[in-house]
Amino acid sequence: MENIEESDDKFFAHRKLASVQIIKNLKPVEKSKEEIGSILGWKVVVPANKYKEGEKVIFFEIDSWLPAGKKWTSKMKPKNLIVKTTNKHGEIIQGLVMKLQILSKIENCKLNLEELNEGYDLTEILEVKKFDENSEEGKKEKEKGFPTQFIEKSDEIRLQSNLHYLEMFAGKEFYSSIKYDGTSATYLINPENGNFKICSRNFSVEENDDNFYSEIAKKYDMKNKLIKTGGLYAIQGEIYGPKINKNPLEVNERKIAVFNIKNIKNNYYLGMDELIKVCKELDLPMVEIVEEGIFNYKTVDELVQKSKGLYPGTQHPREGLVYRLKEHWNEGHKRCSFKVINDDYLIDSK
Image: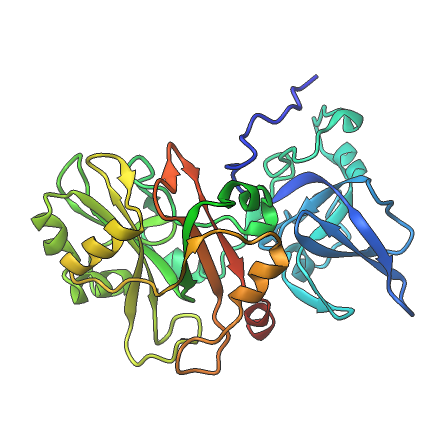
């Protein structure tokens, strides 16, 4: 029998695209054969009378890409294999629910369904992957590995997927910043060979004039600035502008907004004050800070409302906000940060 205990720290669990969760707050929808329920911080739709409150189920987060051609997905339409945000019955629906019993259709799966704990990660067992809307662009990149030995990939956990962040942030100094709708990039001097390294969200990219990442490196003189620091920092930011995600910020040239800097020589991520200082020293634009102070928010709904708003000077809903502790927000791969996505943005970008 496989070990089915979870060992992840509840505050810092990695993102689980498919996991065992408990469905709660089931409510019938008038004149419909469906019900609205809650899982973690998400709203879900399920067939009426098929699920019971408190039942353990398989929950697929948004952006989950279910494998085609499996026994448990054989009756699903291709478009339904990708879990997306929908607006249904007057609710923002974010996630897909299935019965635990589908695990019996997985070859060589030896899990005891009755003993599975809430939160157990099924992502690998079910071969679920994250859907990347930039996959076409990704095919054009040279698919070398991302340098995770020096800096983590930049994907933030959504609050609704780990409600423990409310408890962990409570009473501590934090700041929030605007989430720019673009494509993330990483720049550093490789400590192993001294070479300038450019990366997209997931891969290394050739240094040339044929991609956004190199264009931004040249525009902001990233290579020389990093060399002058002795290769001290790795810089991560969001590239946005024309030909990137429909340019919702309505700028007339591609730009970058820095959201992360890591001191790779001393192995720590900069806190808010040092981040602002280094961005000024390197003459690099930073993400806009919206709020700072003591974290007193109690519910997801409060933060979802805070996430609403437009990108300055436009009528386009901003993507959302990123929340971090002011200091020590990323130590030992334990990220004290999360994102809250604006529902209006999700509806507008459908």
